[in-house]
Image (cartoon, rainbow over all chains, first blue to last red; front, side, top):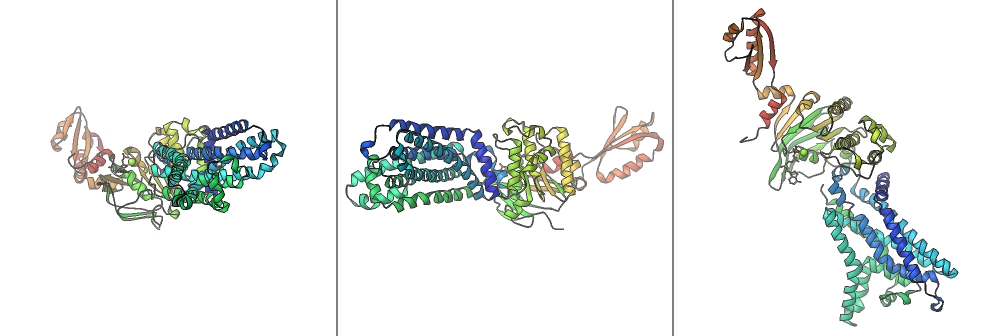
Length: 273
Length: 298
Ligand SMILES: Nc1ncnc2c1ncn2[C@@H]1O[C@H](COP(=O)(O)OP(=O)(O)OP(=O)(O)O)[C@@H](O)[C@H]1O
Ligand SMILES: [Mg+2]
């Protein structure tokens, strides 16, 4: 445990000095404020409070931004050590590889959590300024908060796995961007195309919900939209969200970080310095 | 007394290149062993195998009684890689504190360690701003953490200035006196000569020589050089008694095999007062090294 914490402390320090903390916080804060400002049309007639609406739009922001930040922070984790030549020495220390990864993970997750907390706090403050009834939306915001951090955890793990597989920072960066595009953007487009082509067939009725749950980004979106009252106002996949029980998307959100870290550990174990 | 390191018939091949070929080596506590060899001889490969960083093909390796790279072995072995690198964004103190924590020691000891390698003044600067020798010293400082039973040091003095080198070997002497075993590689033969107990020469992955410097000297059986200075007027008489000697200015120079050395010295001593001075130059470590390390066709 002390070894994990020591690694986390050094990594956090490095993130501070590399300005990753500043970049993540500024990005999240900026986007949250922009969203709050953009969505500031009167909401009274929708019958929902201001914060709930903000949470709905924050959900679609987070699903892009948090995986991106997570991958940007993690792609260098192993490949960077290989390139700098710091890995051989580190691996001669009495520290397990999984402890090294967990230490980095803890540090990077802390950075993400700070960024998410700052961004969401700003959004909440903006919502409360214009609508005192925003208290209603606090549970949804809280849910979005921790599920965002879990989403980040999943992509951190995926980033470490890619970093170990690529062994070169440039290769790892390419893989990470590929994963981001694939999981967050193209996956949905592909599903949409398949659903349109399939009509009411087997894919749409049977496979589609599982396909959504299998992608951590979609599961995250499903979970937050299904749980949120503003569902109907927000999303394209809202119909599907209603069809899938919330415990299933919650399970996917919870299981993916563990799975991703296990993958990362397996990949890191294969790296010979 | 249990051996710290036991290697027998170690073989390692990289994609057709035999990096190590049936190498055997034992190191007892307190011993300092120097690993010499040309570039690509297999020194770093051998060290990485001892540390469990890379797998080997055949043979046995036992480090502190265990498998190389096993947690118990890692806890007792310190390593200095040949190009010590650290994260440029951390300060020397932070980096050493981190390594201390990984070995379960108090991070507060970082300053003491840095002081031992003469880096306390720069301890709070980022490693990115360090010179090569300063980075090397950070590497040395981390190798001193805890009480390692075995130190594996890959070209530890590369990049160090002459005074630091001397300090470094003094540090090693202290560690060895406390029972640590030391395996170091080097291309600086003269410093190895005085500061290690045993020398091991690798050539093309094969161990071509091992022993104390005196052992190697004997097996190499390289000729000894002598320089005899005669008193005024006696030089011709001396030259006549020493076949093979050549006159260089006022002196006689000759070389002879090891086993002829004493008879010749006795003969020269027989001239008594006619000899002003005599100097015996044993083959240098460089000579011995090139004798063993000479590869086929070279
Ligand atoms: N990862 C690797 N892949 C392929 N070949 C390798 C690898 N590492 C080392 N070798 C080869 O193994 C041989 C021994 O290399 P090694 O690094 O052990 O030499 P060395 O004695 O440390 O040399 P130097 O004095 O230059 O440091 C060389 O022929 C080298 O090309
Ligand atoms: Mg080497």
